[in-house]
Image (cartoon, rainbow over all chains, first blue to last red; front, side, top):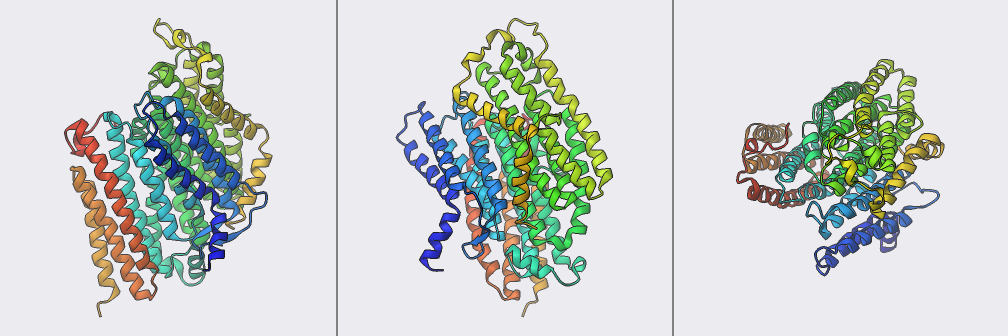
Length: 489
Length: 100
């Protein structure tokens, strides 16, 4: 590859390069920033993300492969790049005020956040199993550290150890699966694999079946599908809340992107086999997630189980397997990102102001103490429950419609029953927020809306706007998603 | 020449030992060592396949896996040290603040 081609390929990964350079710069400047004044580094990180967004934006994506078939620069990657950048910007805005409380007001926090975004982008654009694995590890290792960052807290230590050990364990399955897929196809490139698997008596190739199964176990751990979800509530509870939000949306989106790439681009010939597996996983994941969420009293654990249930709904789109299903998956991931980050954002703000907010009961009276915050939380929870006119409803509608058209009626019936169950635990929070507090030390006395920091307020407004925008006018997002999935089919 | 199947059997044994170690051991460092065993099983598989398929891709991947494993060790040991300072133990069954 000559130098000119190399430079040309570098322009294709401009957002990744910008984020990476900003991360390094933050690490360097951190040495000169006095403790307690790391807010400037947050601003720098945000500037990096915004700059990357400028580098990311192009009106008509060109479909091509970069670096000798290592990475794709296609519309599918383009969609996910945008999603990751938006998530990162929101998380940085929400983090800015809350890091003091957890004693993690460190520059490394922002640098690691940016590095993990580069990992996600690499993962969503991977055209080769090596890049897929590297992206996964870049994002995972950065997030292991972020989870354990409040290192003086025993809870965070425990969460970090659990996440690290199970994450590394799942990487082992992931890699061992890749070994056998490589053995079956003789190549690590997704396109060459699809070509190799295009002919022959596939279901009887033991290497391929074993490899796919192991790979699926690895994916399931990372997106917390039942029965590989045991770590999720513990890790989500112990991690700093902004990182919990980040893990719940961005990591899931990145792994779903990689899953779609692998299963649609490399293994479409096995579709009858993997559809059945995903059917079972989807039903288990939805049901266990929702039933377990019903009995939670800690709001972070409740949202953790809710995120498991949402992964189940997204799997319904994977089962549908059609272009429409994939489009629904992308729309769902985008809607889920904004509504979940928004809900976590309100939790972050309450925790930051009051030092409490772990229990659902801590939110008693929030709707009266701070009407705007209460209303925002209510919208996010309605959206998570899938009530119109919010993003959650539209996303569920698209996904379920795609599944019905692919004639998976029973799956959709189970999914709808599950959504109905889920309404109970989301609405419980809303009811608690709008019931009067009895004790004088309650939230209502100490909370004032005027004191919400402007950064977090901005992020909250963006999340709220996106949730309602997708809910009321989903057309443009649908078009974008539909254009994006053409890269895979 | 040693046939491919022999390499794969050794690799599968290594992998199973690793999984068993993770599931049965209670010491965090031993669990971690078992995970490294799983990664090395994958490495052996890649090298064996790469040799018998006549391509270099697999052997190339092994170098990447080694680097990533080294990075994971660095983070993992730091995590365990931070945990030990607060908990005075590295036994996974004694660490149970979070229910689950």
